[in-house]
Image (cartoon, rainbow over all chains, first blue to last red; front, side, top):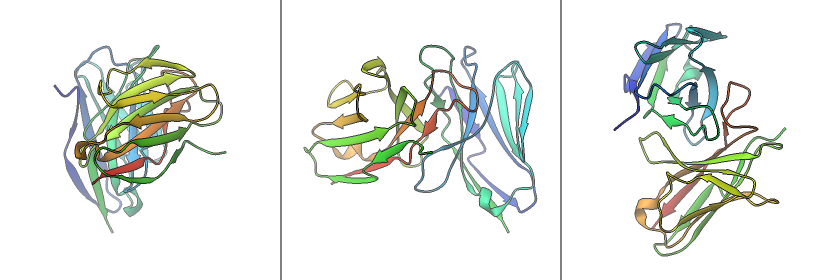
Length: 113
Length: 117
């Protein structure tokens, strides 16, 4: 049973376009939702994160939209650049004594020049 | 301002040997997590440690795998009698406290890529 599901599996976007990556979760106890960016051969880098008490969070070109009732959240990358080409993982955790992350399978984003 | 450090970055072992992976968390971080990433897969939680204590090892295989985070020194993930199925990238992450908003992590290291021949 996959608790965090990402879609699409891969994405190709033209430079300057908007990249949208979706994530759905099953466990309603999750209350922390980060996105990680990973380049080949590197470790995941924390990009942006949100909690369910807000519906949207924006940092620079990156925005998380959160829909608690639908149990979905998405990452929007505005003005996508070739340097954004990477694998993106959504994750979820339950705050508290543990806070281990449950990851989606990841999506490969390619931004064409 | 060093981030999470892991070594070695690449490790090759033959079946039956032991693999020892090291992780030095961000300075001041006392919470360490180990994750495993198989090719074309997301990261899977293995174990969560605080200094000298294992808090949650629910994702770690019961046999051959062990982890520690001593009072002094790095966290160690040890895999005994490695098999080909252990080939993967192993990532360590740290945070100053559990549960996080951005700014509290967890922050990942560059990983150790283990290849079992």
